[in-house]
Length: 378
Ligand code: FAD
Ligand code: UDP
Image 1 (cartoon, rainbow, N blue to C red):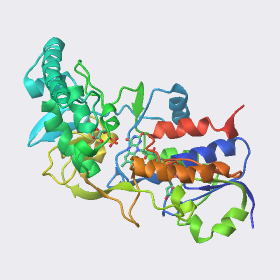
Image 2 (image 1 turned 180 degrees about the vertical axis):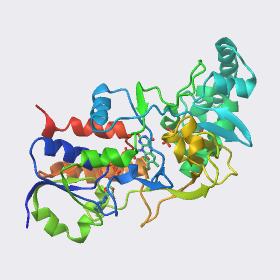
Image 3 (image 1 turned 60 degrees about the horizontal axis):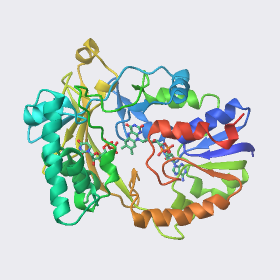
Image 4 (image 1 turned 120 degrees about the vertical axis):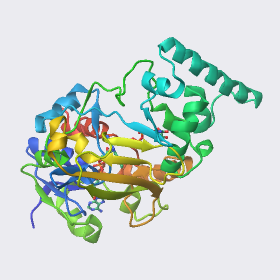
């Protein structure tokens, strides 16, 4: 039986980046993944010449030049800029909240007019809180009203958020909404980051580039032959679920999951944008992704005569479903801490990535974390 320096469980961005860096240092690695393909959640399937993001739309963005240079050294990135549209009862609004949104919402045309409108709405929200003796927003609903006012909260936040999280905004933590930028310029770029794009030719090229020259096995579940895998390497890099690693001894961590309904149309352009959010409660899906817009621009869109969309339905996670979003509420965070305490005592196991750390990481954060690991210093 071959022996390896590292057995890497999971071929997502964490596992693939780790393997790449270790391989560069002359270490012998084996990467296994239980899915029938490599790449974890960034995996795309090419259908009718269009790269379909099978586990949800992925847009790479970062302000970290080292990370940007690193991914571009593997594959060149295109100029895609995420600028989602919100559809509320058939009326369209630009996101994130910016001068275009304020114009569409209230007809205001200058930053001063927009400030005045938002200030008026904010002060009403603050006054209502004060009347109840509340000083700091206690939940997402209060936070959103204080941040941007009631109109935007009711039309663009409430329904979407309650669908996405399956909980009332008044029962959700305030921090979720602080991620959304508010701008007093006409700029629909969703991210504030300096660099942004999609790998030219799709994410599989990034993963294949990272794993070039490294032994991999798909359709291979670590837990089905754990003792054998553990004996095959000096160290294990584990990117699966941490509670599963410890046989759920303290209990099961919870997640939100997403169900995707895919449709192919014999038309070149379905919605004119990669991402359209449906912000009203009555539409059962949260958003529609039209995949070709991530990689096709200008005449390329019309030249490709078909298009593929995915409707996203956010649901509660149950065993057997894909665990997408950790629910970092108090109950789950406390449970995670118990597992983390065990993980910290392990000498030859590195736990990393969104499942092993039970944390929502964007892609650039995953790469940043791998590059900063002790293993790859000096
Ligand atoms: P994963 O990609 O989940 O990889 C873990 C791998 O481990 C999987 O392939 C799994 O099959 C494998 N595995 C698990 N258990 C076992 C086992 N027992 N044996 C063998 N293999 C196992 N980030 C952005 O920056 N921009 C975005 O636009 C964005 N959109 C997202 C949309 C959605 C719906 C989701 C869920 C995430 C999004 N992200 C986005 C975050 C991004 O997906 C993560 O940062 C990244 O995929 C995490 O990589 P990972 O390697 O930690 O996990
Ligand atoms: N959000 C919203 N309306 C939108 C888009 C986002 O209310 O049209 C809220 C929602 O609560 C979401 C949060 O903003 O959870 C963060 O949005 P982002 O797009 O960053 O979420 P992601 O899907 O990347 O977690």
